[in-house]
Image (cartoon, rainbow, N blue to C red; front, side, top):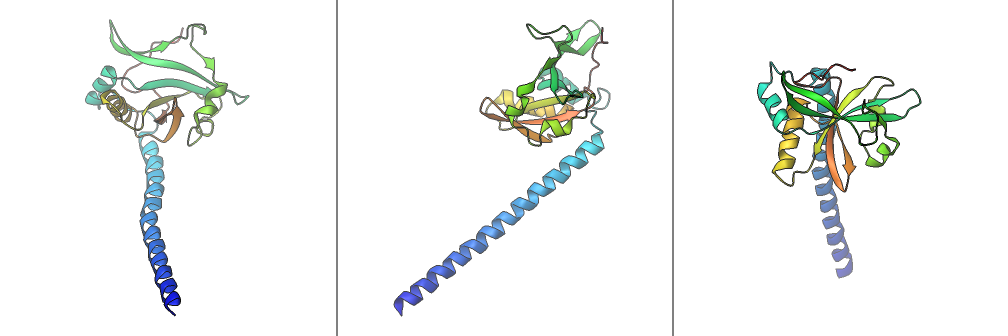
Length: 191
């Protein structure tokens, strides 16, 4: 009889733990769903254009001081993703976006990136891009380890908008956002 009572007590403890775990997990699942809905709403509201220099001077100043990673990405008709890197620069007419050409790459900076799938984009970058419609990918460390990480993240979210997903690079998680136009400053005309 004592064994039956001990088993009943143990099982009721298991049940209480299970109920507690479900009660704890439910808000986390709901929060994750709300976050995904919020991301969709923020992308729709921003129309994928990022901050303008007139309306968001503080965010644009931050972007000029600390630029997050910025790549122009496109998916060609064959499904191959290509990219080229951008950075901010101060010139005689003011701040502007400029292409960072690769060491051995073409002058226009475009290079194939077949290994981009190894970065484990979530949601997959391939699904975010439309064929032959280049967009700008901005990224910053998702987990802040130092002041530089914090500045990059603040700069990204202030100028480009809230992150829509994450990817892994060199053992770290990065938050990313994709927009149609570069924020704040104009790029030089294509040659």
